[in-house]
Structure formats: structure tokens, C-alpha cells
Length: 252
Length: 305
View 1 (spheres, rainbow over the protein chains, first blue to last red):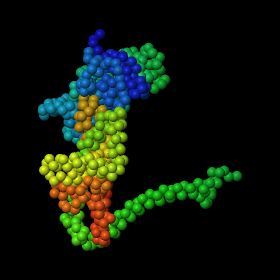
View 2 (view 1 turned 45 degrees about the vertical axis):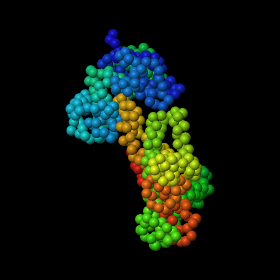
View 3 (view 1 turned 30 degrees about the vertical axis):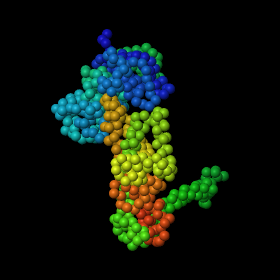
View 4 (view 1 turned 60 degrees about the vertical axis):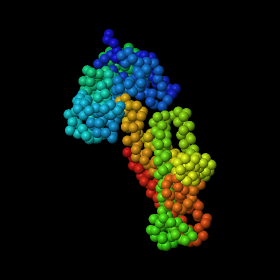
């Protein structure tokens, strides 16, 4: 088997004394889409936020264990480097309201104080927006504020902003739960394209979405990883009764 | 037989419950009205008692550079200048501190023993009676300023505009700091996390996300601080040196509108003198009201977004 891009080893996360993620071990291989599903409060979002070290920004939140990106533990890196290598897209589209579309795409460079010349700027913006399947729709309005776009377009803008930094892993936290079905479909299609160059982890509340888009699926319940397998196996022959109960809709 | 509910519905006179409700509502409204009438009354009496001075002096009251009650010459310019100088100097000194505290408590470490300690201390600053600041200023600050003045070759009064500004700066830190903290907390977590997940450091997030978003709110906090600084009386009166001369530089002794009223009110032995002091009070009243309303407006517009 090829070496995994991302490995979580005995990962635990806490909010104060609440144990939100319990001893999670998982290996994710390159150019795959991993879907993480589970009922509300099962720790799936917290797990995702541990991967790019956003979890620790919440006051009172702590974590231990290892997350290896290739062979390097991201908990030994400065969080900034970890976040540059592991991009993230959030549940609600969050383009910066004071920036226009163009500047939103290169916001990561601006925030990090990286100087770009005009040619490179334009190349990165066009590349990223093209990859995010948004270029055709916005190429004539790059100087409008990003918040004027529709919800689905805003979310694709946020994806463009994340992939502009050329991350190795892209995390998406319920990226379509605030969107209409048409926008949802276009984002799902987009993820399929993006996985050619990226490893993608999607947290989703929506089982059908997990089944549609992912190569592998992890089922979380009460903070623990219950089952992790090829998506097809999870949905056709789950080994754990809790997974079975969840996918057959006996609890949600 | 009619049920209780139907009886209540049919009753012509309000029963006890409804009467209590009406009494309660009216007492709330009248308590509120008393406050409104009091403030209007204060303004009206300020205007009423300033009329003799307005009639006698007109606009020379505002621009006149001489304040000499013995010769019945009343020009408020030295006090206007004194008030503006002390207040803006105090703002200039306090802003770095209050913004730093606001950023620290609002974003860096909202919860830790140090921030709890800091937050309580800053709130305590606002609770200490101003006469204590004046006292401390006289005993500690004035000798220090005197030493500085001696070294730089300025007349070593110790008391003066600069000393008053220092005291004021300390006193107004809590206003901009605690409002600023609230405004910084209003910045949506999604925007901050968006920036963090692009690899921004805390400093970069504060500079590029929080600052542009919360700028109007921070500015409103500064305006409220200014309103407080303009009207502060006791501490300023104790350390400003109390002369009616136009201040030559920031180390000169002077007076503010508030301090001259506090100093001379008991000595105002004839109508025009008293009236001039009251007109000074009216000017101060109006300026602080305008500053406060402007601050509130900005906050309201900001929190509605």
C-alpha cells in the first residue's frame, strides 16, 4: 500500500474537561476524498479542526496525540506552517467583506505578507478561480466585493482562496450545508476535479453526499472513530451495528 | 352558569389584575419621564442663567482671550483651549494603551488568569474617585514633571496642561478599552478562522481582519473617552495650575472649562460673573452631549451590520 499523506495517531481533543475526540487513528492516502460522517456532536468537526490546528484557538480547547503530514508531526511545526500546508473551507462561506473578489483569492498571500508581482498575482487569481470553477462567472467582475456573489459562488471563492495557497490537503467542514441543491451539486463536482491534485477531507452531515463523493468514509460516534473503510463497503456492508443503525436512519 | 374566564371577559370595570397592570405601567413611564425632564431642566436652567452673560458679552465670550472678573471681562478662549489641549493630549497618550488592552482581552487571550486580572484592574480605574487621582497626581506626578521641566529648561511649575493630560489619560483608558474589547469580540469568528486557516498569525489577523472590521467601534470608544476627558473636573482642577492665562505651551499652567467653574463658582459674587461661569457650563454641556451622541450613533450603526 502506498504511503499515507495524512496519519492521525492516538488523537484526543478536549474542550475544557469535555473529551470531544477520543483516540482517533486514521490513515488517508493521496488524491482521495475522505468523508467523515456522524450525528451532531460526534466530534467530526473538532477532529477536522485538529488537523490544521484551528481547534487550539478556542479558549480552553486542548489536544494531544500526533497528526503526521507525510512523516512530519504537525504538532511539532509552527501552526502557521501547518495551516499553509493544510487549507480549510468552512460551513458558511466567509469571503472577507472588505476585499474584492481578486483580493479575496490572494488574501492568503496578503495576510502572510508575501509580495507578488502583478503578473504572478493575475496568474494565481485566474488559476485558482478556474480550478474552483468560478472564473467564467466572475472574470468580468473581479473588482466587486466578494460578498455580492451568491452563496454557492461565495463558497467556490473560498475554495479558490484556499487552493491559491497550494495546500497538500484541503479540509471542508460541511461545505454545502448552507447552500441550495444546484450549488451543492456544483461543489461536489468540483471536489471530484480537485482531488487530482489534492487530498480532500470532507465533514458532512449528509450521508448521500458522503456516498456520492468520497472514496473512503469514516463514521464517528460520541467522539470515537467507529468504522473506517472504502465508501462502498461502509454503505453496503457495515461491520459495526452503530454504523448500520446510522446509515439506515435509525438515529441521526 | 358562567365560567371564570367568561366573567372576566364580560366585566365592564377593569378588575384588580388589570388595574395593577395599568398602575405598574404608569409608574415605569413616570420614572422614565422624570429622568428626561431632569436633563431637559438642567439644560433649560443653564440657558436661562446664561442669558445675562450672553446679552452682555455676545460672541466675545467664546473668542475673548482675557478672563478678568474684577474688570468684568469674560473671555472663555483660554479655557476652551485648555480643555481641548488636555483632552486631545490625554487621548493621544491613552489610545495606545486602551487599544492594546482591547486587542489583548478581545482577541489574544479572552480567558486566562492574567486577562481576568487585567480586566478587573481596568474596570477598577473607572471606579476610583477622581479626587484620588488628583491627590496622587499632586504627590507623585507633579514632582516628576517638575524634574523633567528643570532638565529641559522650562519653568518648573510641575502643575499644568501636561500633568493634567497624564492624569486624564489614565482615567479614560477603561472607556475605549472595554468598548473596544466588545467591538473586537463582535468580529465574526468565521472571518478570523478564515484568515487563520490561510496561515495568518494573530498579529496578521488583528491587522488585516479585526482592525478593518472593528475600526468604527474602536473609534466610537475613543469618542466616549473624549466625552469623559472633556468633562473631568476634580482631578484636573487639582493638577492643572489654575491660571486664566492663555497657555503658551503644553507645560504651561492653565484651566479647563470644568476646572474654572469648580474653582471660581464660590467666588462669583455678582450676576454677570456667575452668569459667565454658567455659560461656560452650557458650552461644556453641549460639547459633551454632541460627542456622546456621535459615539452612540457610530456604535449603533456598527452593531446593526
